[in-house]
Image (cartoon, rainbow, N blue to C red):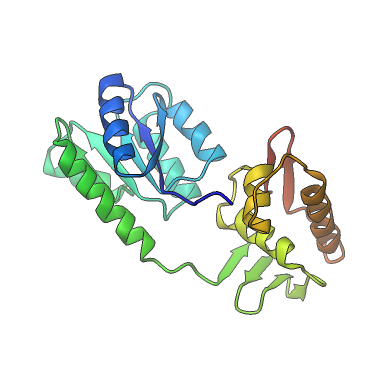
Length: 229
């Protein structure tokens, strides 16, 4: 089974700054992904899980402000630290009002960036995940390991089926690869065989269909699955 590490997304179009951040962060034992435009950042956010985002505002493609807005719509609890040259009080207040968790004024001291990252990650790790997830008419409740739709319980949900649904529902709109879903649900290495997972997804869909014609799981061909909004 893969060890879960804290993965940080660096969104910065200046290659020297991006590399400095990557080198410093990885030396602390974190993993990193780098995006050089807002468009690339949104693609990575849809495909992978991140513990924190370092976001420059002045980036090509989708602007940093738009990326922040989209993150807050899709993953409101994901820490976002802004990298910016804007240093007026009004600018700082506006960034926080727009949903930033912290901001770093350029030029910055790399030690301060690292210290602020660690503060945000400690804060995030201290948050308790809710035992109840609601999505459309569906409710997943970890207190009794039940899944209900419009108050009607799905029949005979297995441990793996529950784990699959919990993973998908924790981050609506995010596409999960078959590898990630398998390793989360079975807690063992993925060996490339998809039949077992596909059968479980099919079984979940059948159990949902016993209650409603609404679809809750979407297949993203060649990649994996996500919940359907």
